[in-house]
Amino acid sequence: MTAQPAHRTTTALAAQAGWAPEPLRAAGTVATIMAGRQIFAEGSESEFFYRVIGGVVRVCKFLSDGRRQIEAFHVAGDVFGLEMAGEHALSAEAVSDCTLVFYRRRNIESLAQTDGSLGHQMFQFALQTLAQTRNHSLLLSRRGAAEKVAAFLLTWPERTAKGRALHLAMTRQDIADYLGLTIESVSRSLSQLERDGIIALPSTREVWLNNLQALEELAA
Picture 1 (cartoon, one colour):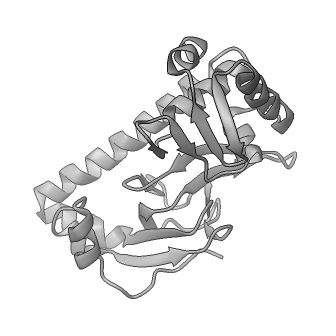
Picture 2 (picture 1 turned 90 degrees about the horizontal axis):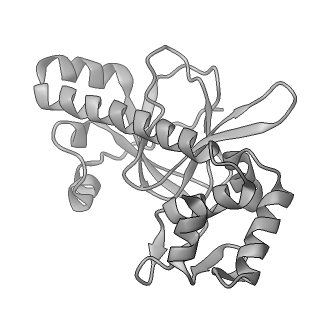
């Protein structure tokens, strides 16, 4: 079932976050989606599109043989679910507990007809989606599993401690489905990077980047 928005306006929350201009700021509603819940299904009506305020969302496609291909992970500030057609081409699920803004597509389209700044913002959202798709294609084009895993670690945005400590909200199976690898290949690559002293793995979801230069050379 497609998640429905809670009846809370985004005005105060978005103003505090500082990311959405008027009138878009007041046009959406906020919902909290628990980890593992589906936000929308492939083929469902694209009545809403979404912006992430907190948490991580995965957008994916389930293939006829049962395999899953994750097309993108979305984090705070990202927009997803904005379709040209009337149906969603992919499914979206909450990786972690998420706070999202739901925008009703027809309402925003009507506002954009009379507000040039809103039309420009919608265009920027479309460009963001294209850039994410291009970057994922470049990531998949890397030759080996280790190169793909290194590139993923370098591009994952949730970092602390001067960009060297990463918290991975997703599982290793998620990473494998995003990189077009098996979970065994992802695990072997991470273990090899740890043995080489390039990274440290304090826990399953925590990664410390010990040698950024070596990681960058591997991902190049």
